Length: 352
Image 1 (cartoon, rainbow, N blue to C red):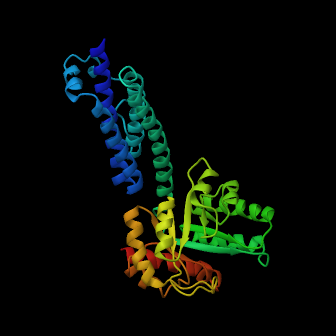
Image 2: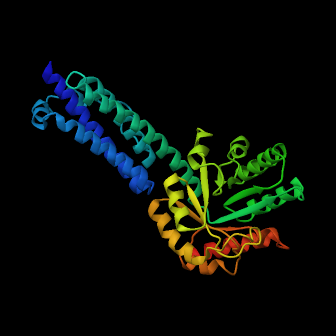
């Protein structure tokens, strides 16, 4: 019976280790996320270190590959994977199953080792959730080039705001953020629901400024948080589904804090003096030039923001900026449709 016990441990040790490797590679190469990749790697090393307490020779001597009746067993769809994410999900399920088997069987040898296996199993559940939700956000945001900020206030009618949203949706915007100041919550939620519906119908990413609660209630894709708003982790607690969270940053300290927070994108700026926020110190293109590669290495998207107009976009593109946020250039335009199209063309032409 002891020999069978070691065979089960050996088989599930191999199964879990291989699964962790697949999960790690997906997070590293598929998601380009060093944090998630590092978590998978740590799990793999914790597994290996924990099982060093069992003699490797003892495990190997129990192995009977040739006599294993399970190696020929196949079930329909066992190796059918339609995407890299399918590979990750299958690996995560395989890892958790193997760790449960290890927790049960090692109990007969070492209760402390069994407890470690159980702890690792719950780590897999956490990693799977974070990776899948991150992948959803990444998929939605990775094609965003033109990010438009639309302001709503008591001086504007909902129709005026929605007409501008509709114009941007139809003429090149990839993502629109609704910034509302001075509105009653009931009015804001009503406007946000109309805004989100229009964006979804047009296949545009919808973001609500500051208000995570309004973003979730309206069905928006995400929320944008300033330095004085709730934390990213608190915002994530409000929703159980995929949710894009952006954070404003104005210097490298704030940037590193944003990266540590696990945000999906960071707004970097102000690149230039902004008429919508004239009192904020200008970070300048120099900050953007430093911030963009840091965010790229961290696997987090960037959005250049602050006083950006068509004549300043080429300079930003030359220093590595890919996504730009514009506001007054469209809102104050005599022809928002034409301006929106021109801005998008400028971004796409540079890409070519």
